[in-house]
Image 1 (cartoon, rainbow, N blue to C red):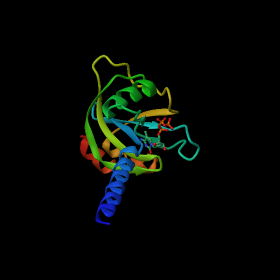
Image 2: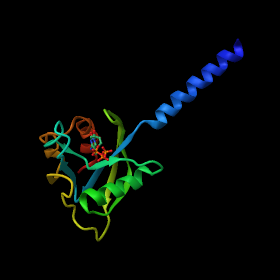
Image 3: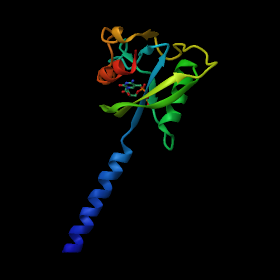
Image 4: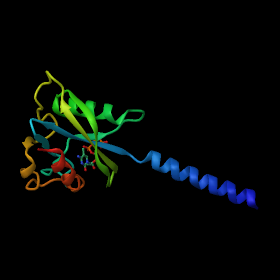
Length: 149
Ligand code: 523
């Protein structure tokens, strides 16, 4: 009986750990340049269209989060960025969890372009609150303010 209980517990633990590892991770980029943060206006889905976000997207299987930040910024902004650390804690979203990474433009990068958004805007700390952010991103504004001059 004891062995059965221990096996069941071990199996439960394994599936709990596997479940956590399987949670989809979405990275968001807090791209800071010249003391301002890049905000991007979403076009989809309808519920989020028109709301502002930190650009990013799903981490692919086997991909590093920092590599996903670099890839997403190239795809969505046409910019070369250098990730430089996490900001804030994991944020729960419908899709799984959102992790914010700080980043800066690499020297010689093209300026970010709205290749996948309806608008981009460089915002200062005092302008952060006024934007209609998507809910998850709004939760990181406090930490963002501290990261800006
Ligand atoms: N968010 C979010 N904030 C934020 C990003 C980049 C994403 O709340 N800064 C949410 C919005 C979506 C989910 O995360 O529910 C996936 O973001 P999306 O659509 O930008 O990423 P994609 O394009 O990689 O998504 P799929 O192609 O659908 O995997």
